[in-house]
Length: 100
Image 1 (cartoon, rainbow, N blue to C red):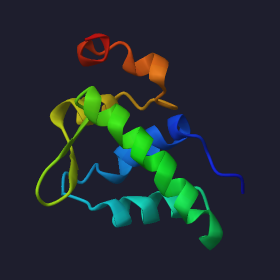
Image 2: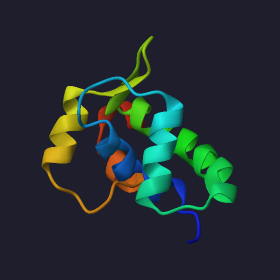
Image 3: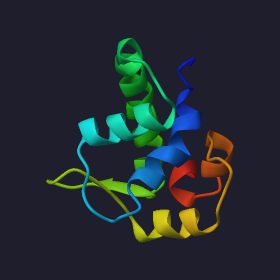
Image 4: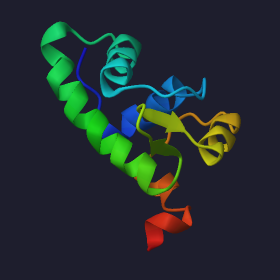
């Protein structure tokens, strides 16, 4: 399978955090690799794009970084409850923190 762009990773990344527990980068990468059925040799590219997606989601407050790892925020949970088909940069522009 071809490796998805960072925008395609945003919704599955947020969904991987829906249990409200803190997750480290490796567990998130594994969840995304499994979701997209990526081969072992594609994992480094998945991780690179995941880091970009994480930065975007953190910037608008949908997820946060703690000492334990990354966790979904209450705003992130509200977004997941909307049952979106995807999250992209255009969608994130609706949030005030992006416009700053």
